[in-house]
Image (tube, rainbow over all chains, first blue to last red; front, side):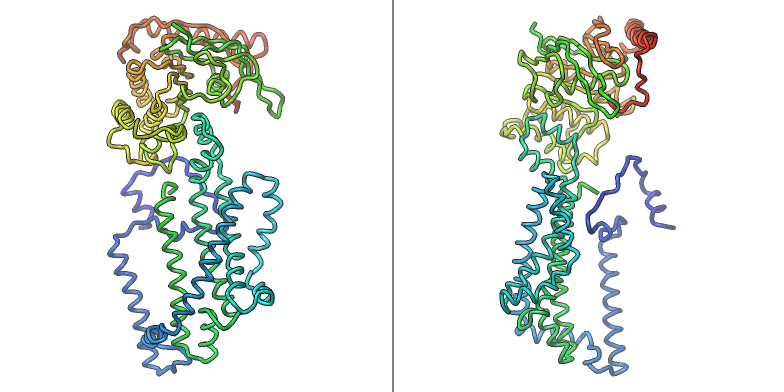
Amino acid sequence: MDVYEKQLEEEVPDFEEHIPEKHGAFDISATVSSVKIHGWKQVIGIIAVAMVVLGGWEILIRLFKVPEFVFPKPSAIFTALVTSFPNNYSHFLITLSELVAGYVVGASIGLFLAAVLTQIPYLEKIITPYILLLICTPTLALVPLLMLKLGFNIWPRIIAVSLASGPMVMINSVTGFRRTDLAKIALAKSYGANTFQIFKMIRFPLALPMIIVGLLVGGIFGLITAVGSDMVGGKIGLGNKISYYSSLARMAHFFAIIIMVSAIGISIWIIFSRIGKKYASWQE
Amino acid sequence: MDDVIVVAKVSKVYASERGPVHALDRFSMNVKDGDFVAIVGPSGCGKTTLLWGLTGLHPFNGGNAYILGEEVDKPRRDVGIIFQQSNLLPWRNVLQNVYFPLEIMKENVKDYEERVKDLIDSVELSGFEKHYPRELSGGMQQRASIVRALSYDPKVLLMDEPFGALDAYTRDEMDTLLLGIWAKTKKTIAFVTHRIEEAVYLANRVYVMTPRPGTNSAIFDIDLPRPRPEGITMDQKYFEIVAEIKRRIVKDVERQKEEGVYQSQAYSTVT
């Protein structure tokens, strides 16, 4: 029996018009399944899959005696993660601060531009092509140029991160701010609301679900750019460590760094899906 | 008693792609303090235009309108509006929606807590304060919007087919509920509807509008006792009044057809 039949058995559908939401560049709704499964069943399933995959991986590598430089065992990766952590901790912090600094600057500018430009259609039309250009051009490609001007430090990387995340935040927020609900604006005006109150109490909450999507996507793009800039920029950062360990074929350490990078990415996802659940769940 | 709402020969012309549309033509109306007036007329005759003009959001092109002696040119604090749709903010729960006007008016919400609680009780929404609009039925949503309009204690209520989107049974229930609120709060109410039965049941006085361009056709003083029990809608006298108003509207349409100025509103988008 398919999922929808099952759902129909349990609840009468409403026949209200559900207008499909217009999303910007990306949509996170696919990550939030509408089918409810008991929490513990889900957790057990996920853990079981992880155990089978990791256990099978470990057994196969031991069985066929695959050397570490070809493919490391999960246990070796775990050992490398723990033993190299004191050494790599500073690199972790550097990449994290590149990400946070670049992201805060980029996202704030992106959000501000979106809020202002949607109020001035003429300016929006002029600026949009340049924002699209920024989105379509991998900002990583600009890092060598930025390094020539700013040196082998974290500044070119911070700029690259903000150039990658800012436009993502902006383009999604613009989609959000373009949603106008005349009836709700009329309602606010009938109580004497001023422009700022209409922005704060109607337009911003209406845009918030899309802004959160933009912040999430911008964060992930920022992470990609931070790690990539480390690879290009050399010397410091997790991305540099990835190049370093892979050039020495120290694959266990290589994977240990990958785990650290994913941990940042997963945290970004968790933070924004929590925020989304709290402030944008009215839209479901 | 003083006239709280004075409408003197107001007109409204909309610009459309196919030339100007005369929605309202020199319509006049007076509503006394604490009175309940209904405005009826065929679809597209300008009833909604009249009400939106009175809100101050949608100014008239000609004529004058006064509320409490002041010319209407912007939204006023002593006017509450109830729309066709409940128009609740989906990201706020019932209580937060009710406080919405107070927040905009920068009132101290605490001072209104008791008043709002009484209002919520009177529309039988107690226990639903923390619910979000999507969790409520259409009737409950509209009741919440009535509480919202009353929260800041306006003197005048403007209602634009408030129960038009509800099913017939809920609508009748809401009509009775509204009469109860009116009896208790003594608001001055201008109520727009296309349902003559509803207008006669609710109002002291019914203004009939002609088909577009809407202008005064007739005024009916509804001589039914107060308070009106629900059963009154099955009385002979009630039916006679309803029939008389219907005859009047049919006659207006026929006259316009004879003069060749009648525009069918069946396909109209401007109301």
